[in-house]
Image 1 (cartoon, one colour):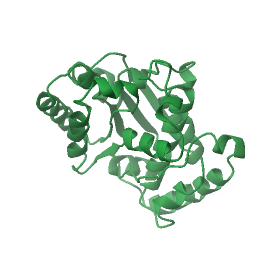
Image 2 (image 1 turned 90 degrees about the horizontal axis):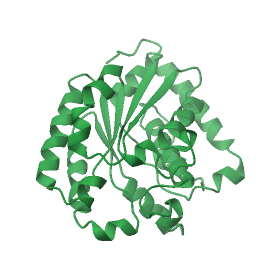
Image 3 (image 1 turned 180 degrees about the horizontal axis):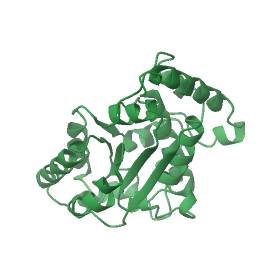
Length: 261
């Protein structure tokens, strides 16, 4: 993990001001495309230190089809690509690269096997790990899932990188996967560790529904994978959570969420 230099606090304050300016400058038509949803600050100390030190910052997006971008109209519409663009706008002058290592159909055990080559070899400050949906659909053992994920998180943290876990989406598919909640609980328990955070995709989609946007409108016709709008709004919410989690004094994270998106 890179240690922040003496100019870190000043740099982070400037980043925060730039983010607020960019947030307020979003055109109304674009802002209205994403439903209002609360923003949970994502506390990621290794990533914060790398940003404060001036970067560069490498983030690995590890996962299955939701990371690969099944349902998106093209590579630029995937959530990793849109998250990278959002973070570059929010962190002007900082080199931010997000490497998409999503492979459709994989479960946790398969991802752990490629963890070294596909993720750790890139010296990332952060690994975003989208996982659990395929295991729930296939009715794998939640206990075994917990063991696999615990070992994987240990391996990542041993390198000094942060871990951001992403839980399952909402939609018609969930009716056929009663184990989904158990898998999501495993991820929530792991997120109690320092340096591990949880991006609650299910909770985000619940908030969209509460704002009048049905989960299906954010999903492809298969009822499982996101469409372009779903990926865009997922990336926007995650970017806001990452920025809100930087160690700054300013408006509470919820203040960023009050703007209708």
